[in-house]
Structure formats: C-alpha cells, structure tokens
Length: 180
Length: 438
Image (cartoon, rainbow over all chains, first blue to last red; front, side, top):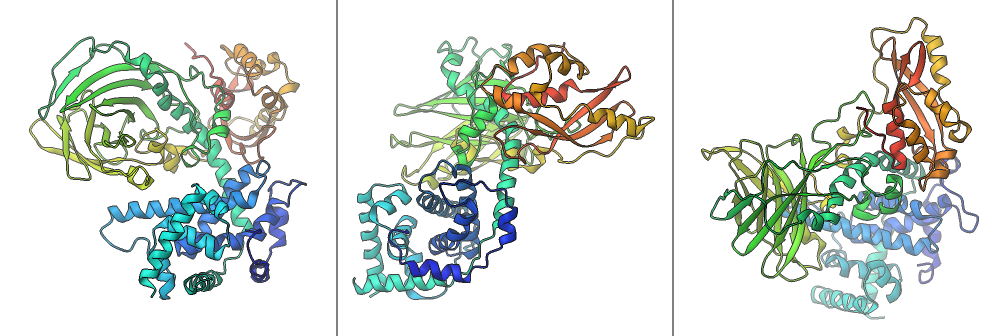
C-alpha cells in the first residue's frame, strides 16, 4: 500500500485524526527500536485500515471493530512480523471475509432481511460494488481504491495471483452489466 | 484507464472519504488486556480441550478390535445398532497424563487455531460404545470420561455443570465413498435444552458430503431425532445418552460458510411424547475439531468470579496480625527459596516435593525460577481460612497476564499456610499436576 498508494491520502487522514498523546504514553504496548513503535504504527495506519474494512463491509461500526481486532492480532506478533503493514492488510481482509461469512450464516437462519444491511448510501456504483460476491468486492477495493498490485491482492486474499485477475475480470464484467 | 475503472475509483474514494474513524488507542489497549486475560483464563479451556481433543490421536488404539465384544440389538427407525458391553468401565481422561507438555506452551503456539482458541493435544484411550449401521453408513462410536480441570476458577467457586465436559464421544463414520471422524463433548447438564450436540461434515473433499451429529440426550429419551437442512430426518434410540445421526449435506468445499449448520434436535420418550428440543451446532470449536454446546470461552459464567468472596462470620482474633503473617507467604522469587522452604509454607506436603522437582525440569524452568507471587488482598472466610487475591509475575509474560489469581490459606497448628490445592492450581500453568491425595 505504501508502495502503490498516493501519499496525499494518508496525509489527509492524519490531518483529521486527533492524536491522544496521553493515551500513547500510558499504553503498555511493546517497543522495538528497529521499527516504529506499535502505537505510532497504529495511529498512522488505523484510518487507512478502517477504510479498507469499511469499503467491503459497508459499516463504520463493523469496520472499526474488525480493525481493532486485527491490531490486537498484530500486537501478538509485532516483534516477529517483518512487514506489519502487509500482515495487517491481510488480517483486515480476512477479518472482513470472516464477517461476511457470519452474515451469510445469520441470513440463512433468520427470517428477516435486516441482517447485514449496509449504510453505504444510494450511489449507483456503490450499490453495484456492494452486490458483488465478497472476494470480487475485496479484489476491486484493493485494486481500485488501495492501489494494490496483483501479488499484494493475492497475498491479502490468500489466493494465487492468477486468481486475482480472474476475480477482477468477473467483477468488472458484473459491474458492466449493471452500470451501462 | 477505462471510464468504468475511473467510475469505480471515484466511487470508492468517495465512500472511503466519508468515513472518519479516529484511532482509539485506549480502546485497543483495553482489548489487548482483555484478550490477554481471556487467554490466561483460557488455560482452563486448554485443559478441557486437551482432554477432549486428544483422544482423536489415539482413536486407532481405542478402536482395538473391529468388532464389539458384546452385542445387544438396540435398533431404532429401521437401522441396526450393536452395543458394546455396557459393563465395561469407560477410561477416564486424567489430568497430567496428557503428554502434551505445558499448557502455556500450547496456548502460545496454538492461539491461531480456531480463531484464538488453544488447541493442545492429549493422548489417551477410548472405549468402544456402539456401532450403528444405517443404509450404507457405518458409525462406530467411542467414548471416554473426562475429569473437569481443577484450575477453572477460584477455589471457593463451583462452575456451572454446563461449563466443562464430563465425557467425550468420537464417531468414526464410513460409507462406500468416504470416511471421517466427528466428535462431541458430553456434559453433566446441558445449559438450556434437554438435548444438544455438535455437528460436523465429512466427505466434502470427496464430493460426497455428509452431516454427522453427535447428540447428548436425557436418560429418559427413547428416540433422538435430527432434522437436517435439506429436510432429511434421522433418528435413533440413544445409547447411554448418546445418539449419532447422519444426513446428506450440500457443501461447497470453497465456501467455509457451508461448513456451518445448526440442526434442530428433538428427544422423545418411550410413548412418543416430546421431551423437548435443542440444537446441534457447528462453531469455531467444531472447525478445530472441538465440539461443545457451551464451552467456557463462549460463556462468561464458566470463568468464575474475578473478585474475592464476602468475608465469613468468624474472623481471626487478631485480623491485622493474621494478615501480616499471610502476606509473608508471598513476594519471594521462586529461585530464592529451597524446596524445604516451599514445603514449610504448605498445609499439606503430600507428593509436593516431587512436584517441585518436576517443575524445574520442564521446558518452563526459567519461567518457574524467575516467577514471583505478589500479595494484593484477602478476606477471612473463617477464623482459620482466608481467600487471597494475588498475582503471579512470570518472566516473558505481560504484567496483566496473571494479575487476578485467587487461592486460599489455612491456619495449621497456629501458623498460616498456603493451601496445597491452591498451589497445585498454579503449578498447572507449567503443565504439572499434583498427585491426588488419598
């Protein structure tokens, strides 16, 4: 993501995020001189990761929850992970996928259609993307919003690079059908 | 860039830009702390799972002969059930015979399994229970009894019966096309229904998926019935409260969501009257091969209170002096004491010298030697017994990992001593089990 993303996006996000220094000082989070501190890394990447989770899940509350849990998992492995950003990205994408699976199961066992309603709004393209199968949706988000390479998307989705091309191809074909 | 690509980018950027979620480092720290606490409390789960999961490794040993030693026709619904000799006692899974090494090690190394659940292994025997033949499916069922762990909570707390399994069931299911194993836990009492169980799928990779339900039924049940997602119904007369039911499944191997199902169960008495219903569930535990309708990690009631109990009516004649003496039992680093020192602090030293010798010969020698207990508070339960809140500092573990430990001290011949039972709960952290006092 650092590799493929326009830097303005991160700068914008940092500008709107209030940093609570007191909270940073009081945290028992670990320190590793070879990397940024976990707290600094958290502050720098949290907004980006919540957006990465928000786009496929469509819920601000869910995305915050999934991303916080992903950081908890990263915290466990902080000293052993060479590429924390890539690790976190994959963890977030996996968490979104797991969330999606839970919603599917809930939908099967509930008679109402209230489960999993998204608050994305009524924008046509947004709705079309939201209607894609999860893996296609995630591939589209990573490719077109996150600027990830095919290899990075494959890593995040846990599939072969060739599968990424297929996912995006099918997603675009689906979007073309509904977006003349 | 095509126009479609551009529209996608703009749409996603607009949506992403609408989100304003500030970092919440305090919230994250809270989550990490809670996770660490859960993980440590998960020790008790680890012990249970060690008992429950491990027999799978020894299932071949447990099978022994292919045929049961004593047959009793006990079929229901047109199938054929042969029951093993019911007088044969079940093997009991005994804590400390797991051979799984340290539970702490298991927790640390296996936390990724099943979404954070510890997943240690246990080795032990199983007893043949019964064989059920229905259509072209053969179901061989094996059982073991399980002793609940003693490290499940404060010593003055009795866990609800649904918290820890008392039995383990393993079903070896084979058809003409596939073979697989599904397991389930038995409880002294099911939490919210007369019948319950776990569900697993076999034969998915082979393209012949089959649901298998391991159900626990009340003693008075004459029939247990499962209704599978496609409407298929299977039922059998439970054998010693256990029924194993099968039904066709429709599972896409590529879609993990398909592996999850909740199957309604119903139990009936001999007259056909309904005894009530329940559900066989699949969940994260099942995905790790570990069943259970109400395992501790899912039920906060199973962790026990995290605070001292109210004081008893009788108090020591000089509570302040008693407290000061009790505090002296804590605070010394393990390596700064001899085994004689440690034994002198116990109310009952039966088998404890051997326990201390084992402790420094585990893979956790350094952690044991560097550990220290820190006294926090106490309440006197009587004039001769007190409940103590303390913490155990262990090198390499976060400060909050063991910060709410509870134990008891007792007055023996005018001196306050650590209760052996409480010390034994602590040494379980290093995978050591105290010998049972006759």
